[in-house]
Length: 424
Image (cartoon, rainbow, N blue to C red; front, side):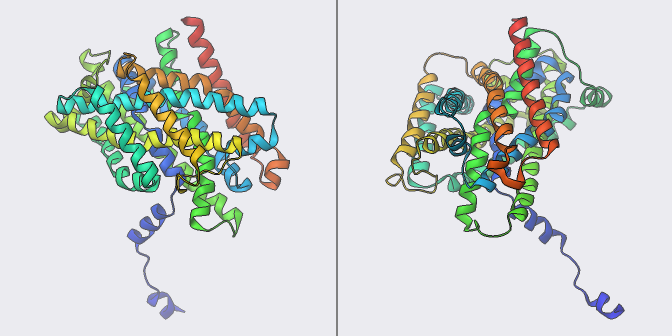
């Protein structure tokens, strides 16, 4: 026995880490897409305007967003359908199309904001007007989606999102007041003002966004079909999805936390409380990158935008295709799913048109997050109801803890939205 123990090969930690990340899928992509240009700008505006005060929101929102996304993942895995597909079979048409309308309004505005943010950041680096860059990015992503796949986009650009970890290093180099940081992280404080409540709605809206609900459920289904793993132990898949979702949401909120912390320690600490341009937002990275701060910021915004905009358009297409019972998936050729790809093209072109209305890019990014925060609660209610129904989920209905987190999320986001409107 002793000899067998000694001869037993040692575990390779590196291989274990590789296996862990290799098993991650839709949840990790969802978490990365959650830190889109809208999210980055919202967090930067938050840190510059209110300093360390909102840091508690990163800790507070994690269990809420993780619970909602986990319910969506479980819905897709158990039913084999996306959120709109389950709604079509379970509720009247007005509920189905009401949910789809909420999604489409939020997504189109968000697409326009993200395209505008990517374009303005590129203008900052190149000197070429953002009005020329928005159609370039739109056509590039449409070409990749139509003649390649989202998998290629994710594989090509997900590494650029790692640039966002520059905010972690920059936060330490800026030498923040760590006592104040810890206090703001663990002791929630709210200012009863329209500005702060709008910021709170924006933070919740950009972390708990409607498009992520539809995307998570549909992408779980497509991921399973792509892997050829519809057969097998469902309980094991649900456990793997739990790890995947929690990892993705943790990644998203760590990035959120350090963007707020970095902008608080740099911009807010030096009296720069209002961000109106991409150049001003990029200044937070100066302690790390110096003159290269603009390059880091631009790469981060382009990388997250290239991940998030196809997710925004794709989630809208999944919803409409499932509502209409059309064939449609990002792995399908456009000739096999014309309606699905038509929705993607229309959503992105309308979003592009919004960039020529004359909105300030940073403000448009921020208010798109606020819009998501206002429109999300009704969809969260539907998610909780669907995943709690034994006729839909069988013996795998949501646990009391998941349901409690889901209801709490809907109530908190509704209360924040009402508070914002009252103070306005």
